[in-house]
Length: 394
Image (tube, rainbow, N blue to C red; front, top):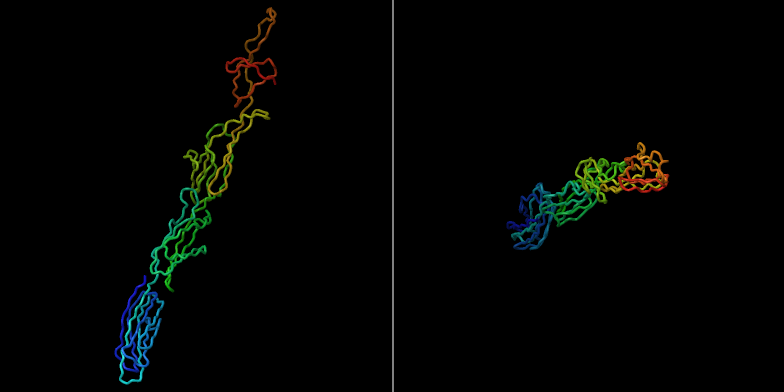
């Protein structure tokens, strides 16, 4: 803030054709700009009266000067000063006239306003560094705060070529911090410079804001897991996360899919990871595929479950759990027959009917329900001690 002051001066009585000079006030220091209005007068008049007031430096050099003539009047002087130098007010009065033994006394008042150098008391950024937090979302924000003294104008610039007039305010929210790149430009940096000015004097302060906001991984992923048993919740390693410099979210829109940083870790969806951590996925494999159409041989068809996974800002990719092919053929590994026909069929006086019954066969090869067919229309089977029932003919 400016400081105001004033002082009076007077010259001793002088006659016509006389000249007086001297220091009016001395010893002001630390001022960057000063303006002064001088109101002068004489107690009697000659034909030619004048007064001069100057601001001089310690080497007696005038840095500002003003004059007025006549019995009374006013004039203004001003100057930008070096705050590290000392200055003083100097004045002179001259009286030239034709009257011998006439005397006059000059006097005046100097009303001055001094401005002290602008100062930047504080200049901070928060947060700095910007680490993008724990929600997995890249953040490009920071808030700049400052306080200044003795400043007429305050400007803010950035190393990206931006400029703002921030006179009268003490903070600015930045929303466009630069993008970091893990491994080559991490953290990213941007410099902000605050300039407080007063006339020709300025004070500056700079701050470098760092940002970690790269959540686009550079590693590859394992996306297909085959030959899985059915109906099992199985953890599988997708890969090791790399190429990021912030907490990164891994998610899947399908229910029943979870992620962790270890096979036996704490699973969740979404889950959050740091650079260098393993990313495990866990979901339940599908049951065996019961579609055997067009299948020949001992095994049926696989059954594939595919889900979409998103890691950070990279594009989503598919992950597949492939349930293995079920065994669909049975090895008929029984020893023979039981319950043979009568020993001598010729002694039976009714029309004989011969029945052959095989030993029990355990169906221990097939892995899905399969139809039993035979090449004789008279074949019947009994399952788990149930009733006999016909089967289709091949």
